[in-house]
Length: 162
Image 1: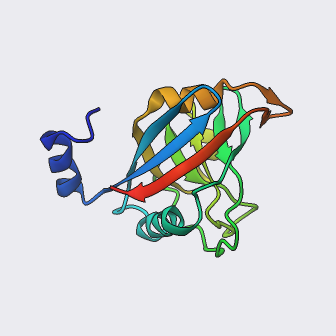
Image 2 (image 1 turned 60 degrees about the vertical axis):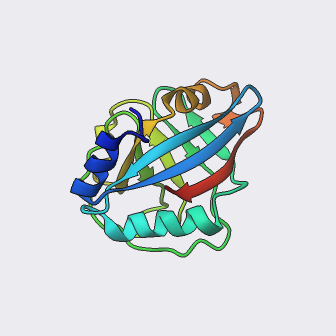
């Protein structure tokens, strides 16, 4: 999808959704991943994600790769804990969700699914979907790992609202 196209900009305007960009580097490449954020369904979660784009995600590594399941970032330093907002967004492939340590313990750590994952739907809040940069997400999903942890570099170099 061309996130710069007039058609896509019109879609964002009509839905009220927002767009975020993550610049991610691995040993092999640096690329942008664009995430459409579902402001209508989970506005508070989207705002927390965007706050972390400004102050918490740059320099953060992807620390867990569950092959065929998801890729997950590390924890945000000083991330404020906030409650589960809604489980209305299903976990399809390339859905972005908040990680947690149980009910109402979201703090900014997030993951991106690599395939449908309905088993996550009543435990984790989904708040967006990848709309461009699929190759980078897939690359992270197939990176060399030891015990689900990437062996090499896999870092967020930039994070912003578009």
